[in-house]
Amino acid sequence: MIKTSHVFLLRFINYKLMTRLTIFFLFVSILFSCKGVDFNSNEPEDDGYSIVASYKNPIEEWPKPMIDEGVEWKEMKPLRFNKTLFQDMNKADVVLGKTLFFDPRLSSSNQISCSSCHHPEMGWTTHTEKSTGHNHSLSKRNAPSLFNVFMRDRLFWDGRSLSLEEQALSPISAHDEMNMDPKKIAKKISEISGYRKLFKSAFGSDEINLEKILKALSTFQRTIKSQSSRVDGFMRGRYEMLNKNEIKGLHLFRTKARCVNCHHGEYLTDHKFHNIGLTYYKRDQEDLGRYNVTKKAEDVGRFLTPSLRDLLNTRPWMHNGLFDDLEGIVNIYNSGMKMLNPSKEKKAKDSLYPVTDVLMKPLDLSAQEKKDLVAFLKALNGTKYKMPIPDIPK
Ligand code: HEC
Ligand code: HEC
Image (cartoon, rainbow, N blue to C red):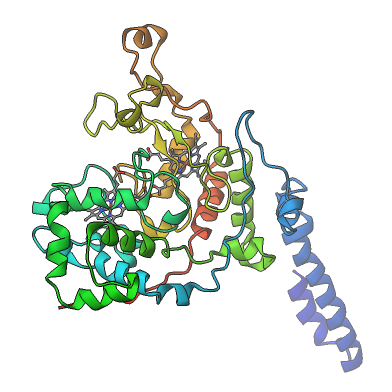
């Protein structure tokens, strides 16, 4: 409308007036178009905007998270910068450990190395539900990523191992993994002349024994760390690194979606065991988790809370690797998983019947809230880093 009258007038008036009128109409049309976009909107006044703004502050000033009573919560924090990472990776014991990690001769068949199931280019796991070991047998669980294993005080999904040194023996000897007799491994490695030099620089003597092999493997694994994510950048004050939806997702993660009750601190884990409802009790894929270690009824279906860093590099997820989309995972949490709980009579008859963790509750998230939460989870992914694979000695 404005445009038609605009053109019509132009034919009849002189140049000076025309310029003034043009400016006037331009002003009016800008005003109209602005009205359409911003001022005329029926959206509630605060479309989460003040929430978004409140996070663009030092972490201590963020809105307080909603934490259930009894939860020992730790605030999120950006990854510590590892200034000596490159020096550390070139230390003799780390180089030896890395070489052993990639060497398939640690297995009886000379076919399977640690890296077969924990591959650096696949987030130190494999992008498969289960992983393939000796004689093509499948592992019972999803191989966890080795990112940040140094910070774990318990290892494996059920926490059955207390240290990397102790842990490494189990894949080496397991029939479905590397199937190697631990008594024979030192002799086998000693016969590879290239290893003598590596052991000498790492330990000061070229004697090769099982203890040193496990020590070197562990020392190397402690250098495997997440790289900074956009969320880390944001926490360090680079507020442009997260968009509005990701920040709303961060807020949901800390409040309505209840995630921080279990996923908190620098690595977004509480290092505890919970049953979130994925035991598949008395069904195909049944896994009783922590119960296998403690034999306590309350531990049925409990698994160690994983870190949420680098999710996109470490898919698929959960102890069974059955979940390959984050939307699906958010839907599980949204349901609260309470529908799986046994009736009183059922529990009385079967004391092992799994009960979903009390921290799990239906969330009532809207479709948009689920999207925002997923956007935040994705922003926790670190930059991808390609580790050169070492030469394997002859
Ligand atoms: C055949 C595949 C396979 C091979 C080979 C393998 N792993 Fe694993 N790894 C797994 C699986 C599966 C798990 C989880 C098992 C569980 O939780 O019960 C695991 C768990 C681990 C964990 C625990 C991580 C955590 O966060 O709890 C570490 C550490 C580890 N492996 C290191 C190694 C090392 C070192 C080697 C070589 C000596 C190795 N793995 C070889 C499949 C494998
Ligand atoms: C009651 C504690 C608890 C709460 C609350 C919780 N989680 Fe978890 N989370 C866990 C545990 C335990 C696992 C591993 C469960 C398994 O494998 O059976 C897990 C696994 C995950 C995984 C898979 C990670 C991987 O590497 O396999 C994602 C993603 C995840 N949680 C996201 C969330 C989000 C998002 C929320 C909030 C909506 C949330 N969690 C709330 C305890 C919790």
